[in-house]
Amino acid sequence: MPDLLWDDVKVLFDPEVNGALPDVVVEETTVEDWQVLLDLVRAQGWQYAYSLGGESMELTSAADMAAAAYAGGISELRVTPELRVWPNPDVLMIFRMYQTESIDFDVDLRELQGQGRLDVLVDFFCVIGRRLRKSVLMSAEESPGHPDLGFDIEADRVVLMVDPVDPGV
Image (tube, rainbow, N blue to C red; front, side, top):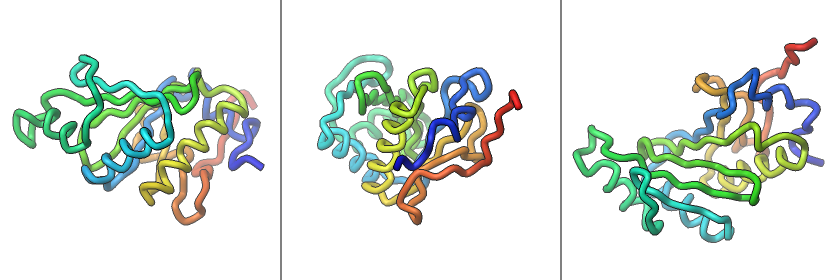
């Protein structure tokens, strides 16, 4: 049985209600955690594309990503490394290295409609959370710090963190 059932959570995936691009984060990370993520993407065989400042490049190491991002000094982000990952040909996750202390990425709710696509997201969160041994939290767009759902490291599965209420009820 899936961790989450579409009928129970579909209101959380309504782009008209929650915005199209929810915020997803793995908190309290390091460059080493970013490297684990990069190694995982390669090991899973997921399609990916890497760019730095909008310019396509070969994916190197997390340390190189951080060095390029902070070439002007640690206090000033120069460019944002971006890693686009397709765990499924129809579902895109966009990772951006805004800082090394968290792994931030976006998903597009318009790509996550129905049980099958929800299962792709849940599986993706589980794979990342288990490998990093950290929670993966998803919040509505512009609502960081108030996760709707996420991979709970203690439960070892994706769980709801809010009571989804259908605004049409």
